[in-house]
Length: 101
Image (cartoon, rainbow, N blue to C red; front, side):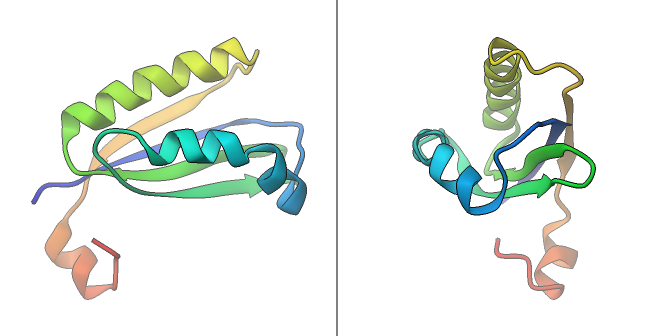
């Protein structure tokens, strides 16, 4: 199976940590239902004021559709400076290094 990784990061003023988990619980549930999503890791760096996520999708079309959707959602929240990148996943090498594929 071919996997596509999407990386998002953007300026973020908080909340952080447990407060972020509470504030973003509904959004996490929504993202969990995305077509083709295998998993997501939420990222945050309070020191640099950036947050985002690493997503793995089971097909490139789902990854592209989600990138468009999430970029628009972030923009609607007033977030600018969004960095979104997409990568093909090398599954054989990733499996050796214990990626949960």
